[in-house]
Length: 219
Image (cartoon, rainbow, N blue to C red; front, top):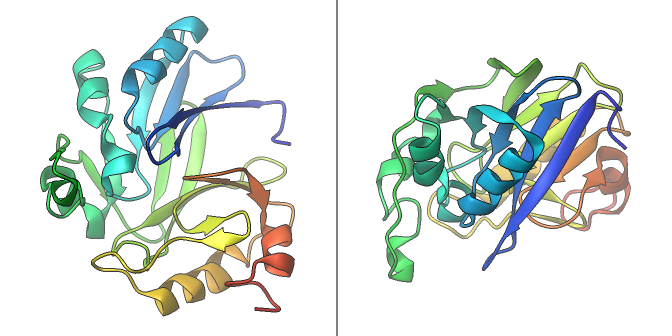
């Protein structure tokens, strides 16, 4: 479980059952939001119930199910910055690039306020995240690592799942890049590190190293 100093809640957005994570340091009234999906009103309602104010929208990548709530949240909180990896920035404003156009319901987002790359740090709401670039599901996919807690926490989008990994058959995808990034960067973290993925249940680095059939040590 995460340290008691960190509160984490999730809003699961249909139709892709995408996880929108809301992360708050205990004792503070600000928070960060990871990957707002198709149900931003549920996110806003949760913030109101907890009397929280969002300090930033942190995006792991630019596919539509992870950015669909950006516009509504920006309308509700006009000062909130949007951050995304450099390689996925175009997806925010291009329905073709974020894959929503092919579904017949084009979705766009306000552009990013900050573009991220490997080695950057993101510091909002008393939370300091290291940024790792792990492309392969999308060209500019990033993950956010909170190393200040015990165990470490990873907000990983569609890179590593419980027993699986992200798809690599979308435009810009690359299976080998994805697996290599997981093995070289995520598996370098302590085994007890908790992973909060873009879909499905939480897992740990150690569990996936040992059992994941796509990228584990025995795969």
